[in-house]
Image (tube, rainbow, N blue to C red; front, side, top):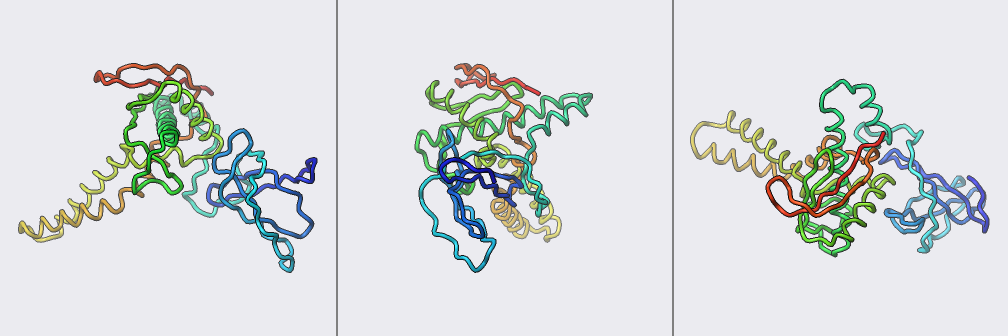
Length: 286
C-alpha cells in the first residue's frame, strides 16, 4: 500500500472472476483489521459507487468495521493479475493480444478485418447500452445480469471500418455515448460488449435448434406424431439454452474489447440497403 494525505491508503483487490487487479483509495486501516469497501462498477472522473468487495481481516479475532455508504474516491487501474486463473473460461482480455496476434499471423488474408469487426461489434453493443441508459428504457427478460436498461428501438450492424446505428437518436448524444462506451469498455466494464438482442444469439439458436431437431428425429420413430413431438422438444430445449450459449459465443467469438480502435467521424448516412442510419467510423491503431 502507498500512503496518501488525509489518512488514506491504496488497496489492491484481486478479482477471481475476471482475473484482474483493481487499485483504489480507502480510509487508512489499522494493522490486523479488515474492511468492507465499495468499488465502482461504472467509475467516471474518479468517482462512483458499486458492489461491495470484502477484504478479510488478517486477524480473525478482530471484528471488521461496519461498511459505510460513502462513495470512495477511486484510482482505478485494471491489469493482468498475478493470481492464478481458477476457471479455464474466465474472461480476461489483454490490451495487446490482438495486435500481437496480427504481428505473428499478418500473412493470413482477412485477419486484420476479422479482428477489427470483433472490436467494432463490442463498441456497437456498448454504445447501445449507454444510449439506452440515457433514454431510460427497460431491459428485456434475458438481458445480462447488472444490465437494467435496453432501448429496443436501437440496433446496429458492424463492419471492419465502423458500425451503423439504426433508430432515433440525437447526434450529440450519440457522439457522447460512443466515447463513453469506448472508455468504459477499455477500463474494465467488459459486460457492456454483450447484448441479448445480438444477431449472434439468433445464429446460435438456429444452429442449436437444427442440431437437436436432426438428432431427435433420427432416434425417434418415423411416424408423424413422434416426429412432431421431437421437433417440439428440440425447439423448447434450444430456447432454454440459447441465451446463455449466445452470450458465451459473443464473449469468446464475435466480440473483443476495442483496445485497438480509435473513434473518428460520426455522421448521418444510409446503409447499403438505403436505410437511414448513423455511421460511426473507426480506425485501427497498434
